[in-house]
Length: 129
View 1: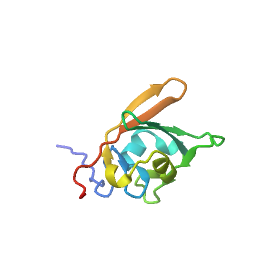
View 2: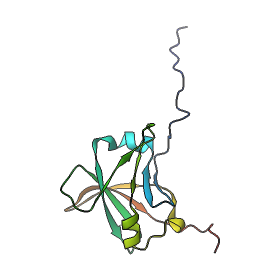
View 3: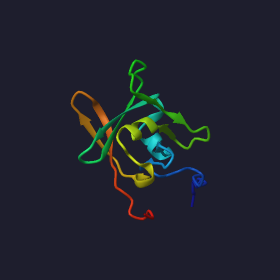
């Protein structure tokens, strides 16, 4: 019998595909999400907020002229990337201590905006009062 075994090298690679909201006012894109969605092709994100559904829409772009963009910070170790969005969270009174965690996302095409990735924030119930 002829086998063609390949050594598993993925222990240090985040296989997480969910978008992360951190306590440090950032939105993280793990390596699997980064690779699967070709985020390395982009330099910036533009964010949108829906107050009623507490949803964030994330549009990836290379538009240097966009005024309200956030730069994607790429991990030097290949762990995906993130954006620091303190001003966005502050503007909409989003407390990252209440909403931090991993979020499943949905891709939508919004007229006049284009393709976005949407996460719906859920308030954590395991936080001491």
